[in-house]
Amino acid sequence: MSTYLVPTPFGVFVHNEDCRILYEVIVYPDEELATKMMMQIADKTLPVEIRDAIEAARQAGVNRIVVESSGLAALIRDLNVEVMVDNASRAIKMFRTSIDSVLIERGVLESEQQTTDFRRRVALGISREKIMRHLRSPDLTIKYAVETIDSLDKTINLLGMRLREWYAINVPAIVNHVEDIQTLVETVLSVGTGMPTAEHLVRAGLPPEAAKNIVEETAQEVGTPLSEEGLKPVLAIAQSIRTMLDARRTIEEYIEKSMSRVAPNMTALVGPLVGARLISAAGSLEDLAKKPSSTIQVLGAERALFRSLRTGAAPPKHGVIFQVPLVHSSPFWQRGKIARALAGKLAIAAKVDAHSGQDLSAALRLQLERRIEEIRRQNPRPSAKGQPEKQQQRPTRKRGSRGRRSRSR
Image 1 (cartoon, one colour):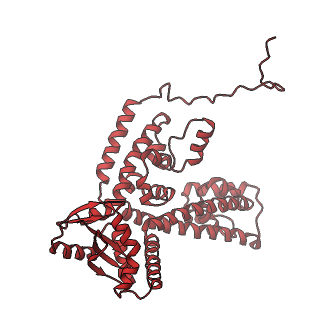
Image 2 (spheres, helix red, strand yellow):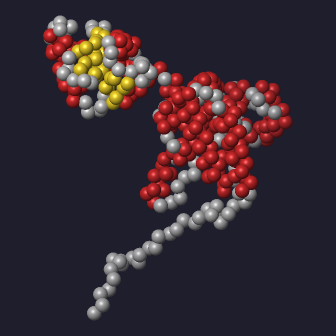
Image 3 (cartoon, helix red, strand yellow):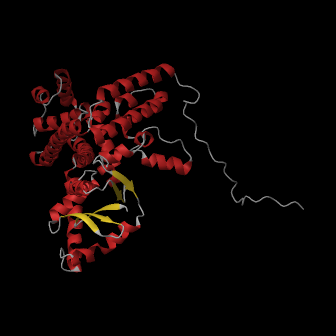
């Protein structure tokens, strides 16, 4: 006669084909213990309750246990007992349908309402624990951080453009010579309501020669000096941009530290920011680890990919990974192969970071560099296939033509 093992929120039960309980480990009414036991089974960790039930059955002479899932069977194979899997076991199904009445008859529970309430509380506890795990996930905060950087970049670029236009009324030379937004902000705040001097410009970060040229041009330019009242909003914009730049640096430092801890292999291949953008595009590090290299290669280029599927145009060769210097600094005829090689190593790195945590960054980086050297050696110049193809134009019908063939008479 076969012996069956069934874990439930009320405990672990070992029963025979007649659904008679042989051994049991009751956890009711401790809902925290029941939640912990069910979460351990979901996490593929052997709960002590199952170990105790099997040990009691084994000492009584039971050498073979039937369970209903392969995952549960894998947990108990090392307990010196033969395990069989029967996904459609009639005995287990009958036991699960009758467990409420059995526990009521044995005095463990008083009514069916108690069984329903306890199952509900355990289910809520499991859901709460899964949500807390998701919220505690470090790659979730990395995803939010990189999305915040993208939002800050858009705002900084927009306000920087407005600052250039507005401040050009006062000192056009500064706006024409200073391209970096950080330097422009520091220059505007340093000069303030007066006219620029070499000391102001050098203090803002400009080279002495460039500062001298700006001062000389300012003396010859036709500018409209803004009043102190008129410069107040300009300085407010510059101060806001400086605050956002400081916030961006703080978030970037956080991403670098988090990525070196959460995904060291990906960080070694593409850097912390690009690695964080890949995690954000995939949803999480675990989701990224599930994706094939062909998907990782075009992550971030979904619009171009769908457009190619819709119109028949050439598909994109790279997405987010185009930001990696190894890709964007390479000749156009090598980028596709290099992006494919990089995506292959990223797929391995994501799986290692998500599941094992080993540091294989040096080996992965060396393999990638060798592959890139091979690509560059084999493709020193563009081939006929590497040339950008001209977009094929569809034949246009004559105006008024319905496209019907004339009938032969």
